[in-house]
Length: 246
Ligand code: IPE
Ligand code: IPE
Ligand code: MG
Image (cartoon, rainbow, N blue to C red; front, side, top):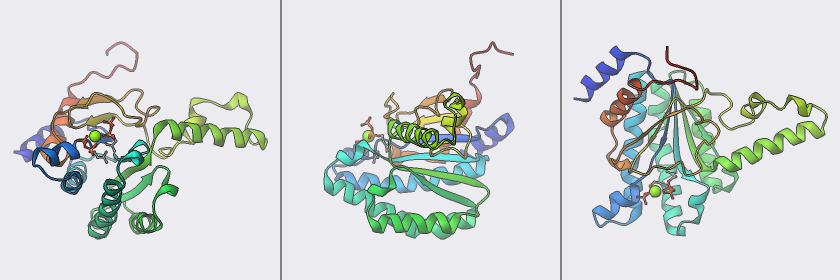
């Protein structure tokens, strides 16, 4: 079933080079089963594996996942603790497979706020997979887009004060180069699960011309099949970038 969808994606061509996903709905998935919220987060790890495999199969080049926002630090301490434990579990379990698949993993966000153990695990995974050339996987953790933009402004001001940058040269390009995502083109497609129609402070600059796809499916139920359906929906869109259609 999902293989037939994949075949259609390939026949259509023009697979989005960069897909971003707001992985939402873990808590509701757990609540539907009368389980504590961390069970939903744990179930969500399988969906991460599914989308990484689906992205590799479809030929997506960059996959950027929103895993934990700056605002999520305001959640109860036990939920945050469970999420940080899961992060380390994910890294321990997936590291060799990700490397074997040719995935290079980067973590984007204010990583200083993470525990020393989580930071060490993140550094290990980034170093271990740095050579991967098939898929760039960005995991946004402790990430907020406004904070990222304020940081870019700070970096620009530092360069200007030091005489390395003429304020007249502060272009869109100069801002883009100082974002966490500087190395990658903007996302072509943004997927949000769990039926919420909002950005929740995710990639506000980078999503300027992304196609938006919202599905009611809760993140733990998201699979290769749902990813391929999103890619097919994307392939039916007419991207105009403000111009008129060809
Ligand atoms: C997304 O699921 C995961 C994180 C934000 C960490 P939620 O935990 O937001 O799940 P809901 O939205 O409450 O269902
Ligand atoms: C956005 O989901 C953040 C992540 C998926 C990591 P939230 O569940 O935190 O967003 P809101 O609160 O519904 O906007
Ligand atoms: Mg949520």
